[in-house]
Every structure is written in structure tokens, then in C-alpha cells.
Image (tube, rainbow, N blue to C red; front, side, top):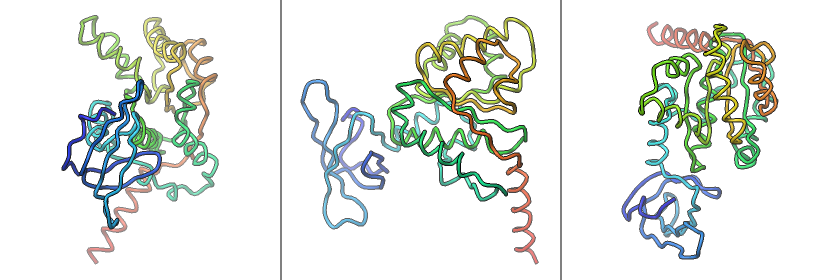
Amino acid sequence: MKTKLIKIGDRHKIATATYDGAGTVTGIQGLAQIGRNEALIDYDVENYEKDITFLMPGNATTTAQVDDRRSRSGMPKEYMSKTANDFNWCFYNQDTGEAKAMINKFICNFPQFQKSGYGLYIYSDTKGSGKTLLSCCIANEILKKRDISVKFISVSEYIELAKSGNSDTVRERINSILDAGLLIFDEIGAIEESRDWISNAIFRLVDYRYTHILPTIYTSNIEIDKLKCDERAKDRIFELSYKIHMPEESIRRLRAERRRSELMEQIK
């Protein structure tokens, strides 16, 4: 984080490895050691009797920075502000302990996953089971603590982008997707088209992420082995993805039913 991004008097939520809360900036002091871009930030913090100084590492982020990255991520607007607390595992009627544990490891130990290029493959045959929402919640949790770029794109949107031409704007957008610190590639199982150029476009993305050791969260309605894409792409996804099988339940419908029930209770 560059010190100039924070000004005295700023009031925002801060997220570091040691603190998560809100406060007002009362002082800033950069650290001059070679190779470091940390800063000592003095905060008037809520629920504390005196100012507290925090060491803000280079990968710490402010709310303004997080909001900016979310707005440029391509996430659906309805999911742009969603975090782990917004994903209600209680909607499911089965044990989700294993999935929750894996996701928690991915969020809390993201630097290790980042170094190895390992990502997640979240799948369920049931529409509305929460795959896309969950992937965005994961990304937003990581964004709060890590100085990375996040991109979201569905496979159908990516195919449309790939065939839209070779202008500077298109190339720039494709490159931003390929090089994202964390990419959500949504609904990879939705494309059943067998044309070579489509298969090649998907392979190029998967292979680029694989070769450059960049973690990807894939969401799909089918298992990896059943993907209708280049075998080389499937092999790379399989090699660098932890599989998470979501319950075969539509939480979208469950939420809708709950809202209807609550409304009926209110208008009795």
C-alpha cells in the first residue's frame, strides 16, 4: 500500500493480518528501509480509549481500494459487496463442514495458494445452489486483506469477448482477465459448443493461468472429467484445483420461499 493513498482525517474500515475495524487516521509515517513500502498509521479507533498505531503492510487495503477493485472486477452487482457472513450455509439440509473448511483454508492461507497457482473448482448440477455467490464471497474476503486484482467473467461472456475482434480495447480486457491475481471463471460447464475456436479460446485462458501460476476459481454444473472442452484444459484444471461439490439444493428457491413466508407473516 502506498502511503499517499491514505490521508489524515480519512475514516474507513481497515483490514490487516492483526486488526479488522474502523477508525480515523490521525498520523502517517512511511518506513524508509530499502525494499519496503509499509507505513505506520495512527488511528483513532472505535472502542479504544487512545490512539493506536498499526503497521500497514504493502498488501493491506482500505475500504476505498477494495471498493474500487470490486467495481472493476466484473462481478455481478448483486454480489459485489457480499462476504463470508452473507453466505448462509444453514440453508442446506446436509453437512457442509468439509466444503466450509476448504474454503476457509483458501481464504486464510491465500498467499500459499497463490504461490502454487492452486484454485478451486466449485460445482453442482443444481441451478441456484450458490456457486457464483460463494465464489464472489471468497474473492471479496481475499480482497479485504490482499493487494491483488480480481476479475470475474462467465465462460459465455468470455467467448463473446474472444470473438468480438482484435481491437486494443478487447486485447486490453482479455489481458486483464488472463493476468488477474485471482480469476473467477463462472459456469465453465455451460458451453457445449464443439467448434475448435471456442475450445482454443478456453484452452488459452486455462493454459495461461496454469503456466503463469495464477489461481482460478471455476464454477460449473458438472464435474471436471465431464467438461466438454479440450482434454489439455481439463487436465490443467484438475491438476491445480481443489474440488468442492456444493449440495444439490437450490438455495435461491429456499431464500425465495423464506421471503414469501416472512411477507405473509407480516401482512396477517
